[in-house]
Image (cartoon, rainbow, N blue to C red; front, side):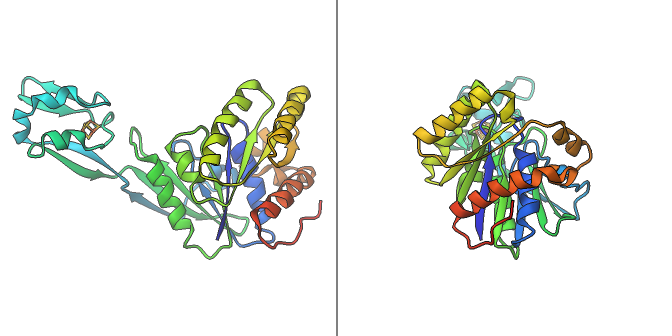
Length: 297
Ligand code: SF4
């Protein structure tokens, strides 16, 4: 199975909307499975019209530290937690761990093996649904205040890889953190979405450094390009100078908002967007190296 990952350096550039339309088009010719790797704020399901998952499973990909009575002699661990998760409870004469701050690194247990236990915590939910567009969607959601997002993304991708599909299309979160790294790792091609603003370009460059670290080929798409054509030209120049494939530009249109309100991909809201997405998909498939019929634009 080949994996296309859609990412953006900055949030709010339209990454999930673009993923939804590309997935629906791709499913017309290929067996695909879609995954929402934005485990902090997943919304690909909603854009694909999925309001309720067919199956849901609580998973555990993280551990947290728990104190027992034998920790009474371990006052020194209070100052060693990098995440400031440990305080001293004078009344109990024991260290106290703030479960929202604990990252489960295990350092306190090394210092106080008799008084600290690391226990698995149920930190995320994975949902599975069949979309109206003939393919399945796997989506992960981190529980409130929990950590271990990168491992949740790994679990989602592992689950999706068992589906009967030839292409996985993954909607990454924005930024350069753990879930983004887990989304990029193992991908065959990254489609990086940006918009024509200095902050978006600056964030894009940061996320492309992560992509390059994993040596995954990538290309750039500019969304809402006509909001600042001069800056869009600058991004295209940046791509050209750095030999980065330029995959296409998408105009700003209120139909994108209407599509989000109506819980459908924009190509279903208005067919006029189909040729734009088909062009992007044709180029992406070429770089992905799969033999697929061209989408006529
Ligand atoms: S496991 Fe790590 S993060 Fe959690 S309390 Fe111990 S030292 Fe702090």
